[in-house]
Image (cartoon, rainbow, N blue to C red; front, side, top):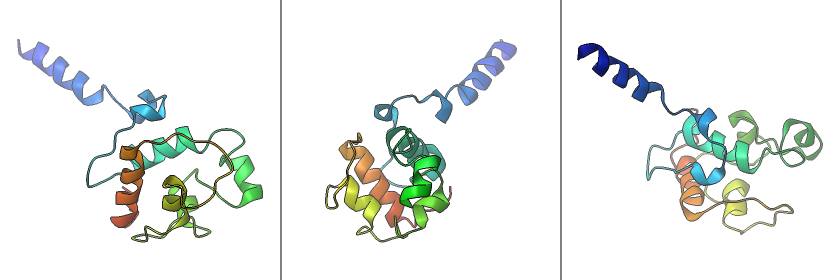
Length: 122
């Protein structure tokens, strides 16, 4: 019985990782304590860093690198605690964006909360 419980516990602790996420719709942001690693990075990877958009090759030309937190914080893409930054502005359609990307209200608010919480590397 103990061994079975240990196996179930281990499986539950290792069952989901960001590599299991293949669609932006699978990313659900919490109301607070938004994590760059668990929420923001996977969302950006699936919605913005696709080939021909803000991936490493294209960002070298455009100067908008969303492949890392450093890239997100550079070139005025976003500034911690500033919800008027271009990243939040694009998500809420306050700034023009030439390509299409998917976001829902939870994801837009989640990115905004991450910025308000200081755009931490967590």
